[in-house]
Image 1 (cartoon, one colour):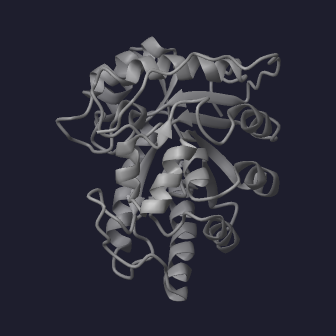
Image 2 (tube, one colour):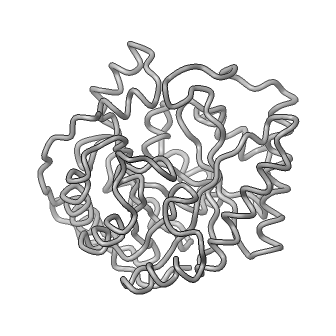
Length: 319
């Protein structure tokens, strides 16, 4: 279990910028939730109550089945607390030759729930080549044919959920997956079409994998459709690289840390995102799995205040 140390509530000095087009929210991940069901995770009702207590208005679904999947119940539970939904997530292996039907069905199911709850973003997580135990379950690189299949199917999936449900597909680069390094992110963007696929800029995973978030924003800002905000502890990251640890093991060590302790620096990042001509959700997603249920709320409060100092959180209803 990750060792989480009490962090300071530090405000940036001399901040004046406010970015109302950036809608700040959080996700079950920040409450230690990785799976639909797990006895070590915070119960979903407590997550929603504490999300409100921490001062957030927007939330992401998290793993399908963690929050209620009945649209009426989901809307009642969210709306009754004064919350709104930004989107949902789905994992898949679109590069595999035989997985299209099952992956499409799973994506449609999540997209339908997202649509029914009044949201319009589907975050796609590429399959990891190391599982939750840290074991390798496949090669670390895709063949040319697998890359072609991945980008072709992403375009097709993006068009399907857009045309059927008005939901926008955003792809989330992820550590220990085939879309992780800066070069892989660029290859993904080059191989997909902008009207079907956008980028979910996960600031923690980009830094974890050696990328430069500000450079990506400058060069591919028009392709960014959604944002996950998190920071990486650079000292722990150096250990992870030296010992070649899996992402799961890294998270248990606490490699994803609360701001402003890690990288990338949040103030210039928020300014760069706010300067884009776009309405964006900025969803805090600090990986804490597994953690004691009493750990997330104080972190969420401090993170909410800190990001408010950085100019986030003034926005009301989303795009």
